[in-house]
Length: 233
Image 1 (cartoon, rainbow, N blue to C red):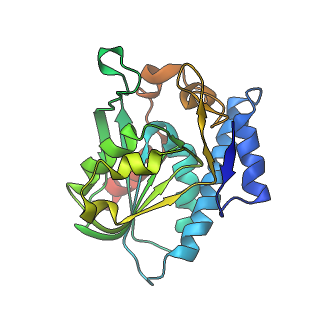
Image 2: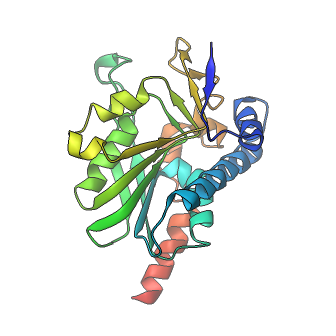
């Protein structure tokens, strides 16, 4: 097993990655670590974004919305106002029980309206391994918006995930990709879990009772933003 740090990894983010890998920490500690990692990504993006008034679209899965995505958003909102948000409820499975063949159809979504063209599409995921969830959600998003740049973001990725995701899109799309992560791992166990990864299946680590349970959850970030949109309308 070997873990490769990205140039963005710092002693602070390394400590947070160690918390994720520790299977003894509570869901509360795990959620806090994910939120803090999101904040660290947000700080990175504040240095990457050069426009004065950029149009930003942030997207995440339901399980990441109140933690990783919230952390990113909290930092971006300190400087920028024009930020839209999307949340996806995916059901991931392996057709025909083939482990290497994964699909992740969208069961439902919360997607805020925006102008067709945005400067930055930021799609966050707790870990990118097979990339099927990111591929599905990104495909859905680019049917409606035209991003100039696409930030693909995860605390940990599995080796080869970048190439795998790029292979799913035409060149005019994948040339917009920029990948942001703190660590890249190159080992999986027999059940397909990336080692050390994020310390297991993210649903259970965050306190959900599996995939079905997390798909019943409505994130607080979605409730709050939806209420504000209704109030404005």
